[in-house]
Image 1 (cartoon, rainbow, N blue to C red):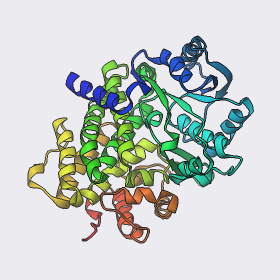
Image 2: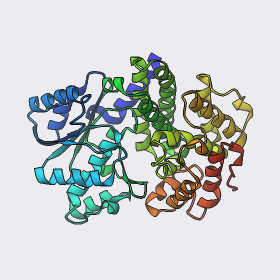
Image 3: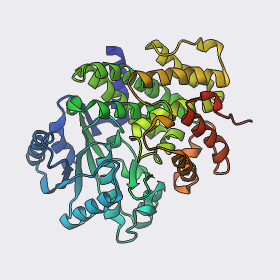
Image 4: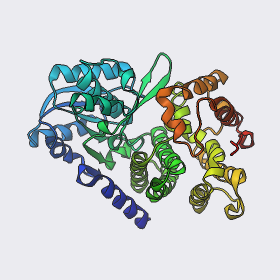
Length: 428
């Protein structure tokens, strides 16, 4: 166990160096980190939350001691970063003339601050958030204008999306129920802090959802990585998956298990590292369409076994290695060495489903309250959106929009019924 955690810490230090403070007791590092990038800070977080109050006091004191002026304290975004919260936060940035945003929040809150900083930087030229969705649109604006995005110091409070470490910002349109994505190196927080002690009081639902989001990051990037990135991400992804699979069952039994908390926090941080090496794919893409019915982590956890079957013939060696992690921890019983192709994928997917079932997650879409076949059609329509095309191309079996109905449609049908054998493999 100590070797696994040591390996994770070393990987994270290699990833972020002295730009990231992580582990228990590091919350007072917020001030010194912030002072390196700006002196007038908009502080965003759960300002009215009783849980947040003592942590807010630590952050305030740290900023003051570092010589950082707090120009305003603002309530953060609601879950899933609704676009109206993004525009609201942009207004606070502009009216206070903040030099830096300090976002002390979970993933959705940090995502909203990233997007708001983009709008505050370029809104005089293009004030619509939709213009920045997709890959590299913010960098394009930086290059055209010579501007840099207003920095966000990301202080994570939950072991989940690793938004504090990454180039991603998910924003949701609450009317359509569709989530869209900014993917851009220009929005990576220049400094980040994650005091793992902040996770000790997380409820079990958030803990499980966040942990499985981290597994999804590791899994999807690892299976889809191309060229040299595959070798780079393998130790990151396999270590992250094993940490989380060890930690979550411990926390399901005893929510105050501190070592379980550390395991999941390290694992989800490695998930953040993974998605900076490569991209997520099918399960994440579908989760954006299920936001009305399922938390993001739960949707990804449900869909990933089915995509693993679809991908298996293209990346057998990687699927087998993932399966060996699950087997080492007591999930799945098949002889993976004797299996190949779709049969291998099914065996590994069954181990993944067994884990999900043990922690109380749904294992088929038809089990999910309110989710009907129209949601499947919406997911297929969303997969054809050019702004989400990167997810199709990140797959080990890349799809075009013309392929979506046949192949992704079959994956969704399999997930609806809970029948892995309904998945149609792509030939050639």
